[in-house]
Length: 321
Image (cartoon, rainbow, N blue to C red; front, side, top):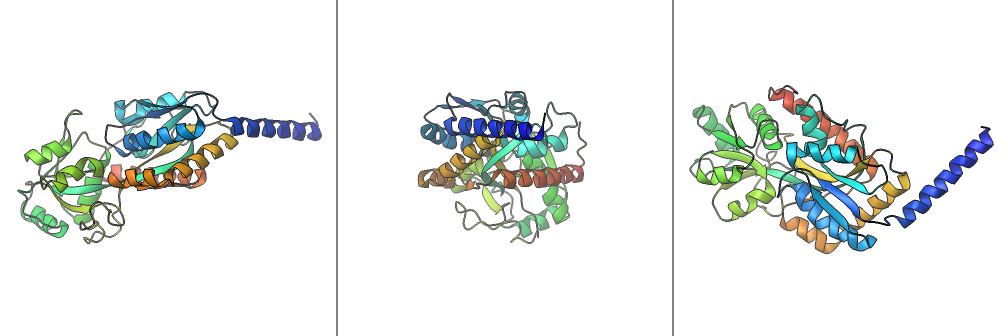
């Protein structure tokens, strides 16, 4: 094929893709979500999907596939047609922690997906049962050093965000805290309220009601800045643990190969939704920070998070299986 014909073919393809993007979507869009109920991926999808559907004039069907920490959901989307009609609410679980603790995934997170837009970020909260005498992170660290083996942290399995956050915290503080691996149907916050565990790093959405009810005591949030829902609770950084910032996050990805004009359209529409006042209010009420981005910014963020959590897993002594 001559260069002129090749250039002409590329132009025809570009025009066709642009026209397709302008008409997108012409049928319902599927948004597959991994992770458990009440997490940032779950909450974000429930808020954003209806708004996208309203703007597109097509239903955005949220499909929850929580098995295997979101890996099942990611595999479904990785194997779907690259036409923009199957999206993934990709998350810290599917794109950062999953690869750090699983040697063989049914997909390559770096190659199987095209990031479209980051959506939301939420800190973990370090809370203790009221029976623990510590009123601050400094006091908790001192208590742990004076009472080795007394504190027990709980989460639903080794290698998840709360467990790895504990590893980062323990390493930075120079202490050892026991970890109780809870069954999938047991919530760490319930175990914390009952006193069966003494402390926990947990998601803002799950902990907030118990904190406000006085059933657990919040000592710190893991974000770089204080959260508006807990303005009196300091960050770990403020508490003397420099550089210790952890957030769970979610965003929208699509299978690799979707036309760039379609990706650009979805990104623009997601950013528009995230700018709506009622959407921002819904996020804030659940302790979630709106975190919109360009596709390139989201890709760079995922790459950095993947490297960070691989390091965290290693420091926790977790070997990928």
